[in-house]
Image 1 (cartoon, rainbow, N blue to C red):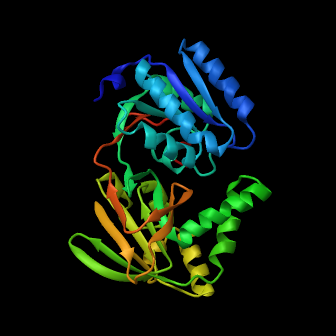
Image 2 (cartoon, rainbow, N blue to C red):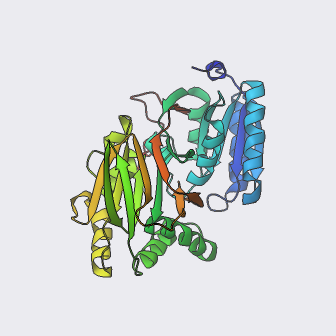
Length: 321
C-alpha cells in the first residue's frame, strides 16, 4: 500500500462539481462543513463551476493531497469521479466519494451512500480498498466505455439535460429518442484472447461495473469483480427490434437477445475493418471525446485505492439500489 494511504486522520481535498445534482450546492457545502467540524477533520474545497476548469482544479487538488499525505475526494457524478480517478491513479493517494450524480453506478457498486452526510461519515471512518479500473487508450473508465450508438445517446443526452433538467427521466427519454433513429452499423476488427473477428455492430460497450451489467441482464456480471472487462456488441437492427432490445434491458434480460454478442476479457484491440476511419467518438463514464483508432481496452495494471466499506459492511441500506 502506498505510504500516504495509511493515514487515518488525513486532510480531505474535495473536488466539488457544483453543477452536479439538482441545485443542492449550498446544502452540500453546509453538510461538509458541519460533519468535518463535528469530527475534527480538516478539509479544503476545490469548487468547479465551469467544465474548462475541471482538469486544472483536479490537478491542484491531487498535488496538494500528495504534499500533505491527504485524501482526494470527488463530489459529483460519474463524469467528475472519472476525471478525479484519472489524476489520482498512480499518485499514491487514496480517493473518496461524495456522489452527486444522476445514476451513481460506481458509488452504488461499492456500497457508498448517495446521501452526502452518510457518504461523508463513511469516508471519515473507512479505509482504502483496491478496486479495478479499465483503460481505453490509457483513458481511465470506472463504469463503462463505448463507441457507436451508446456514445451518441450519451452525447445527445446532455443536450436534453441542458433544456429539461438533470434527472433520470430526462436521461431515459433522451436515450429512447436517440435509439429509435436509424443507425448504420460499423464494421470493426476485434482482437482478444489470441483471436480476431470482424463484427458488424451499431454499438460496442465495454463494462467495468457489475451492478450495471446485472441490471440489464448480462450473464456473468461478476466477471468484472474477477479481473476482467465485459464487451457487448449489438447487431444492426430496425426500430422495432431496437425497442424490443430496450425492453429486454429494462427487464434485466438483455443477455438473452439473439441480437446481442458478448465476451469477457482482460485486453482487447478494436480497429476499423475498412480503411479510412482513423478516429472514433468514445464515451468513458458518460464523457465523450474523440480517440485515435485502434482502440486498446484493458484492465488497468494498478488499482484505484478507494475508501469504501469493508467486505460485509454496507455504507447504508440503500447504497446499491
